[in-house]
Length: 151
Ligand code: ZN
Image (cartoon, rainbow, N blue to C red; front, side, top):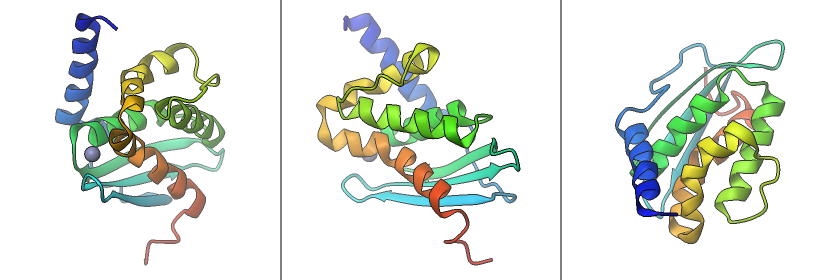
């Protein structure tokens, strides 16, 4: 990667972390998940509304932590909103493979291009935990639904 491309990637990450998309609580959530990365101190909460057709009709997140963790959460919510649960799971698996430096054949086209800005973290194991926090939290939200919510 040449220097100008690297700069661009950093700008996108910083932009997401400074101006996160889909940030805030979601009262009507059907699914929630909470994640913590103790190595870095990152925290993230994911709220989802899954409709009867299995589509993720709305998604929001709250959290604080390093730029990578928050940018990854922002990017994820932006990409997953409006997809079906099955499509979201495919995207999550592809992303988790990619940032671990593994084969991510599922990740193609625009998805590949948008997530490529995170691919650089695979060289930094500590940063992989930051980048994957929101995605693991999303997975657990889909698996456990509202089980953790006491209302
Ligand atoms: Zn972090």
